[in-house]
Image (tube, rainbow, N blue to C red):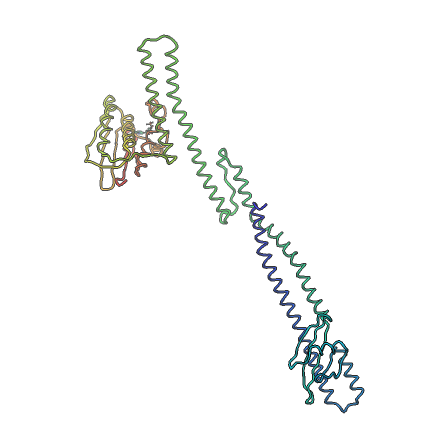
Length: 454
Ligand code: ADP
């Protein structure tokens, strides 16, 4: 139960609201009761003053007919529930109770209030002077009505308070439920989304409120996941496709070799083909592994001090073995020493891939030019050819994995479509970049920029 935000929020709301309500009610109750008691005492004081005035008049008008006057005074005192003393001597009283109460209270110079808990009555003792004599008036008033009033008010608060808290709890629960409704919808929708329907998105009711922003962030995350899942799926499909070709060739060749007896030369020929395809597969697998490691962020560069000009020259010399038989002229401009810190193996793969491509996609009689320059901060490797070039619409995609402009021709030439992806990986691993400018039918220029302070 306490695992539900709805319940927890309602309980918190109840605790805060309930404490406020209890505090406020007890403050109201005590101040109202105090006011009522004060009002009661004020009215008692007023009555005792009236009584004192009446008695003063009574004393001043001694000459009015005796018996009748006293009877009127007695009646008046009876009505007010009052008694009058001169010193300790009782002059007039409305009854024994007030007489006794006044005697036990004694006379005081100022008005005095006491409560008799046995009689449950309030006594006011009010000293006054009349015709030079000192008198005290005392009034004993029942507290029943006052206590009844206070009790009724207390009952209203006592019964009203739990009811108010109950209503607040129900209201709070409904409020919390209403405000969490979009969250429940979001979680239900999110629960339905799996790898199979990553293209689905959460509905965003109000994109500007907190939950709308949460849903938008979640949707952006889904979009990124969807994109990387798509890339992964395509990668797996392309990789399987690429590996199928050498495997099919190997299987076909071995089937033919095993179908009937052959000469040693034939077997050697088959083994050559199998070895060639194995090399091709090994290259594809190794390229895939490098790319996968880079994607996972676990690519380890073996960084060492090297000279870029030596490295490129070495690759050019090796590439001559490919260019020469094809009748492609490979020209290499010797450059000054360019010292660089990087992974020699990866940089070699980068240069070899670019050179292989330049030679592959250049017709016999064409030219491949290699230039390496540097300034204080940057080394530039520029490999240009006079080959077939790349159509404008494909230029932006040649660095994508398994992308080939002419699939059948490139595959027949032994390409896997991973060569330029490795070039980009190598450049970026060294904080650099690679660019291509190409004109179909006239040739392409690939430029690798490598920052020197790596
Ligand atoms: P591949 O192994 O097929 O050569 P790459 O990733 O190295 O794969 O190259 C991708 C595609 O880019 C190639 O299939 C080819 O169509 C095009 N390409 C690469 N280099 C050149 C170039 N120098 N001239 C023309 N096209 C090129």
